[in-house]
Length: 142
Image (cartoon, rainbow, N blue to C red):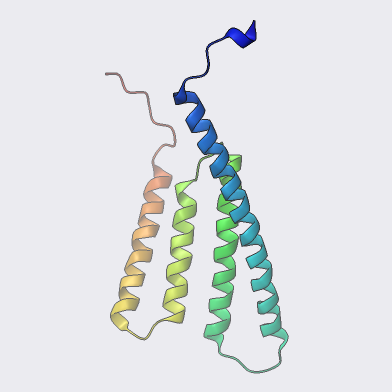
């Protein structure tokens, strides 16, 4: 008699279908990021063992790009481990790393460097505020 039961309402079906599409998309993105991480690692190793003298800024920029790939992959892994939820702190890690990369690579303008440093300060203060607040909110009584 299961065949005669009511069909599931759209409120239940649509979120599940969209969740499956999102999970497939994130899995493909994670695989692409893994490939890019390996390519970046190979380029970094070529740069290290090349024997020519290169600028340290280029080397630091390559390392930070490597960590950006690594952080994005870690964030996708955490998404699946934490029941389909992106932790906000990982976005802040990525933002701080990206701003550090910009300061290292593009530090021609003092004003831009100061703005980038201000963004890093804001992200660090925000991270601190998130860490001191309780993770679970008490139930509100209306």
